[in-house]
Amino acid sequence: MQTPTVSFIRANSYEPDVLRDSLETLLEPFGGMTGFVKPGNRVLLKPNLLTGARPGKECTTRSQLVYVVAQMVIEAGGKPFLGDSPAFGSARGVAVANGYQQILEELNLPIIDFHGVRYQTVSQEFNHLLLSKEAMEADVVINLPKVKSHVQLVLTLGVKNLFGCVPGKMKAWWHMEAGKDANRFGEMLVETARAINPNLTILDGIIGHEGNGPSGGEPRSLGILGASPDVFALDRAMVEILNVPATEVPTVAASMRLGVCPNLNAIHYPYLSPESLRINDWRLPDKFVPIDFGMPRVIKSTFKHLYIKFIKEPLSAYVRG
Image (cartoon, rainbow, N blue to C red; front, side):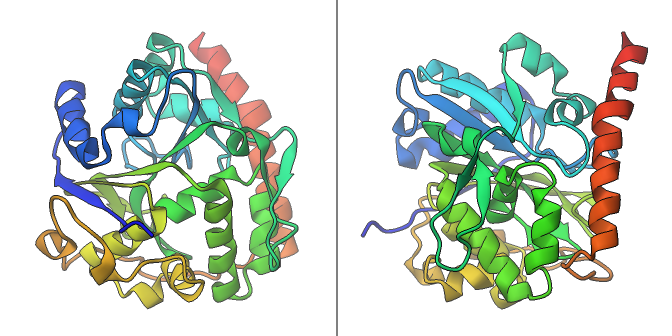
């Protein structure tokens, strides 16, 4: 079994040329982007496209990071496309609201909502977990989460970002089905991540989102980029940097219980270690809220999603036009 490797570097700029240098350094221990992408590969870039409601508040993965990663994929011979299943609205609508329009046009990047034919996972505990076929059939998956606090799950990092591969409003139904037990919900998220099995996760911690996240908090400069082929190792190390007990983060605790998360001292750090990047004043939510959704909330959430996607977003596009 290979030693899990997590690459951390200091990075303080989203300016594309500077960010390109940072990403090349970050990925060098893994053989660069060509260590993951081969000519002709269809490469899913999975950013965090949570919401279009708070542009500038670092609720989503920065467009500049997606831009540079997409460029590197293209240069490696890959065919990148973006995909997500936002809580409210469409992937394109949320992306455009957060400044993605220029990069979509310049690189001719397709962007899709995850739906289509769903893929049923093989899991003894979650054998009815359905995932997007578009995500499961990509040749390469590059996971691009943002470092954020979360009012339900304490932190949202690489594993939680892959919950976006659960299509449509099925996420709300999973909150209702599994949310009454934080341990079970964490295990469902881990099983999702295991099924998607991202080839590479690049964690956007240049500027994070602390406090009442995933969308109600505030930006926080961290100056960190992280990467690993092992999403569970990366999340475990990042939790250490933020000085949050791993047992208090449902996704990390579940990955440890299920035996898919390596011990912290078994992880190899080619550059900086978590100890050298420790942050002692990261703000968690002021108050946590239950993970489970009751039926009224599921129905309200579904109608809000449909309103934004089919009424608000088209009207906004019409006004801009």
